[in-house]
Length: 421
Length: 107
Image 1 (cartoon, rainbow over the protein chains, first blue to last red):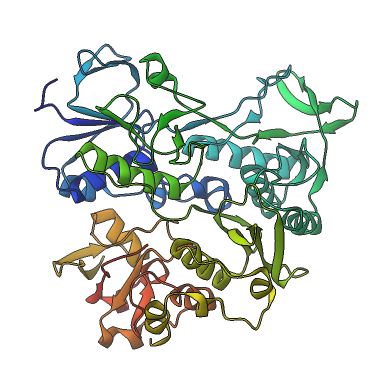
Image 2 (cartoon, one colour):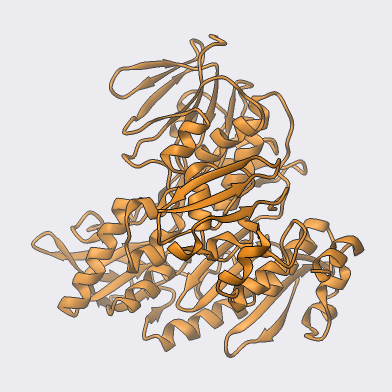
């Protein structure tokens, strides 16, 4: 290994950018090389299915850090570069164009790829997925064309991406049909009461929701998609189709290099892979927690947390995953904020107004708070985040009592400062 | 371009030219100012771009929206009377010379 060689980060998304930034915060003074496949400097992906889809701005509006930030921190960016292989023996990367790059230590932040539909017709023109800036432009153009030609946009998958695209498409005036395989929306991550609230909102905005839809085939005309046929024989006309059926971690490079992978690059709580010279962060990872369970998270917060851990690990320090995972989604005028992981809950109570909707769902297991989903209830979200970070749990009774001040459960000093402002 | 001075948590001052219209957060992220995380990228969803506005500028800023006010009640660092979320502060020529300071923690 060449100790003078740069620390190389593969993947210039949220996690890769965070690792580079955090390396400087950790006091690393050597070279940092950040390699990205796309032509764009590091940018935010969440707006691509939300505001940026309806009001696309300049690429700059999405950028995570400007060129000035990178040069101030001495981070070298190499774009349009595809890493083909990791040569762990030589501590070198092999790029698709044949170049070989030495590394002293390596960070993988390769992200995830949209899960592909495998039915006949999935490669017809007008069948789109959403991951990058250029995908977002294509989806935006397809939606506008649907609106103009009065054809429906069919969204396959009633998860975050699918529903955000549906809401954006309604805003742009297109008819929208959402085909979901399971009996309710966002079923992987929310309780039925939250799914039902979103169902009502989407239907009120004119979206056709179909549950239990098993996609059989996409039908085309002259190479372009024109309908989606389900296993029950029903056909849904389509001017374009957006596939939002989840993502798969991009662990191909790591797996080919012999790193332990398990639907993602296996890392510990400190973002260390099975090779002591290699760390990984973000969507591409599967984190084995201290209790042995393997957790996959796809979120900005996860990329930032693991990015910070990965940078510390590259410096030989331990900085375990710290704060409670959180997520957000914007659909119409509902701000959905979720904190904690609700998996395995045995009780849900709500706080607020279910009809509007402006309420939070509090998830408990054996009387302890696991997670809170807030729909346009910012105060609940922020307070729940602090409670979960502090390891403090309200009772279900307290959570559903609008008169009970959740902040009163927080350690006294913090509450005093917050109220003293 | 509008001149904005950022004070990092360790007291270091950085005076930058920020394009208008843009946000105080955007200016800080573009230049790599320390002490800001901006996890949600400017959506008023995370309160990790919390800043203290130098008191003489407070009156020149539009009052915080209800959403921002609710977020501010629960910021990670000390909440003060001059606390704002920098993603909600739009840079305009009227703010030429604005000074903001980032706290020691955002999350």
